[in-house]
Length: 314
Ligand code: DIR
Ligand code: MN
Ligand code: MN
Ligand code: MN
Image 1 (cartoon, protein in one colour):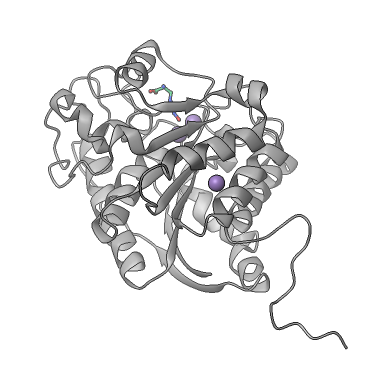
Image 2: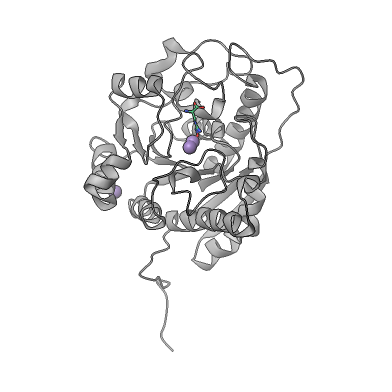
């Protein structure tokens, strides 16, 4: 695997600071070294720098639209570059509003994508349905073709071009969905494996069906957007909006192993790691290490073990 890493130390898609520390913490836990040790070629493109935006007053109840729009425009360009350089892109967040720029930049390089969104939340509120005004609960709404008539004009958002079809999206792990979001999911017929389906089917069947669904017509590149709060808070407590009853560590890893073996993984987001939400060092390291392990699973690490193709026994 050839991996390009981009850090996006950005937190203004939600109200809690600390999530901007995610990229450097995930690196400090040895991400690059561990990927290299499992045989990946890795280029770290460093962190995107974001402009300070003065007077970023809410538009309706949408908070900090100018900062979020501008940050995502820069991230989008960075992801586009990584994809044009031929790597699978790993975007380290930062909050989940960054999926706007990550998916947009990916789509600019790879026309037709499927999106696998692993999260406790659907993040599909529109600016008008959002109960909180936090843009990290809205990124999908800006990207889906079918929702564009429902998206009002926002400052620094005009560069966004909807680039994903409702039929090319699968959600896994949902358990905290607003009524307005639930309506949108049903209206657009979006495929959802909530925690109820994970319980009913088991994660192996969920992943088999996920891949049958996204590959039913053509084999499109996969954008995996992984919110660390998809995992149960007993594993990843250091995150802004933890929700009980989440994926086990094993289910979380299984998702990455299965996506990896498709050979079509083209970009990964790992978002919402927030050390300031951990109450102890153990809570922080458990969360960060889970993020590292999920990324390793995306690039071929198997729990059965691995060995290089050219290995010669001494
Ligand atoms: C809620 C919470 N649905 C919102 N969303 C979160 O603000 O729109 N997303 N926490 O990660
Ligand atoms: Mn999210
Ligand atoms: Mn979430
Ligand atoms: Mn599959």
